[in-house]
Amino acid sequence: MAQRVGPGLVAAVMAGTLLEWYDAFLFAVAASYVGSAFFPSQNPLAQLASVFLTFSLGFFARPIGALLFGYLGDRYGRRVAMFWTLTLAGLATALIGVVPNYSAWGNVAILSVVVLRLLQGLALGGEWGTAAIYLFESVRRRRLFMLFVQSGVPLGLLLAAGVMLFLTLVLGDAAVSAWGWRVAFLLSLVLVFIGLLFRLRLGEPIEYIEARRATTRIGNPIREVFVKYWAGLLVGILLAGAAGATFYYGNTFLPNVASALKLVTATEKFSIIVLFAVFDLLGIIASGFVAERYGNIIPIVAGFILFIIAALLVDFGLSSLTGLAALAVLTGLAHGIVYTPEAAYLAELFPTLVRNTGVSASYQIGNALIAGTAPYVMTAILGFGRIWAGAYLAVLALLGLVGVIIYRPRWGQ
Image (tube, rainbow, N blue to C red; front, side, top):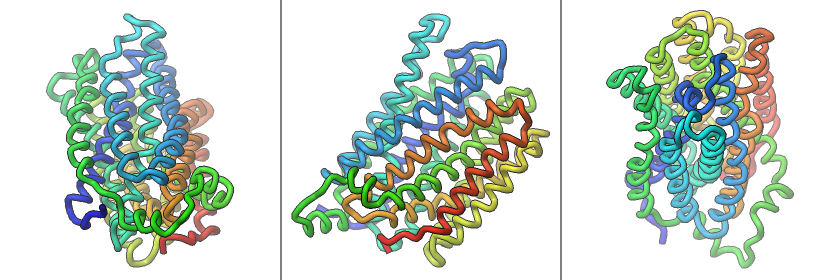
């Protein structure tokens, strides 16, 4: 039975998405501590690269999760998919907090963390797309309401960075490095319980129910997306990949490289991530109103131009705390400007009964192949010159920009 649109519905979707992103970002925010626990090395950049590589592995599970939970959402309902994605992600995150250090378990500890990151990726692969289209199909002002789903990203990042910053201030860096970081991972159990309380009250979107009633035969959404709607899928992959790469450039690559190079303290690093998240949120809110009034293309193009500028300022960002803070503001705002219309744009690429699969696959394949690997690739080529790391990101942004300008969505108007 369809439910009336109201604050409760928005809170149910947004709460679960926020908690999922907290789980996903905590691994990156706590990268230096995770590296010390599971990937000890005398070379801080090599240790950081190992963490980023493990971080990127979770992204490769996301497309599988996108297809699995996208299929469930298209065939059996959005509500079913959202329940399982949140549960799986929460359990995987909490278990990372109890895996013994490398000194105790050796390679078994590394393998355990990798498996749990893969399970996190599997769950998040279906979470974002299902939550976005659930709200998209439940409201009239679709482009504006995407800001509530997209706000889960900076709020999740803000929560992860805020928790780590709080633990550092209360316990001290030594205690957090030794064991305190695990508290942040275990906190996921409480947060997931809260999210499930909201989501168990949800019904199915009206649009989805009507689409199911109007058809006599439900095809395979995976086959249709890759065969019938492949052009939209490709454009969506480029868009999501470039936006995601810039996101991780601003809040993962730059702060952690600056920390590894001893340019900032742990407190300053977490503060920079908080700063990024705040301006990301501001951009998300502002672009929701712009997209609702003027369409998705204008804010997406504006944001991508800022992506390219930010990418070419990498040396400036790694020159001082002031430069790092300025670039955090720029990349956070730029990503927010793109992120709200990105959700609506992807949803408008596909018709209702394949939308869950199409949106999830576009977003997660782009993030797996392009965004998730970006911190590792940029760290690996950093030794050849900082400008090359920035140039790599600029090329990704240019490809995404061209795709959006050339292709126009046909659905969801």
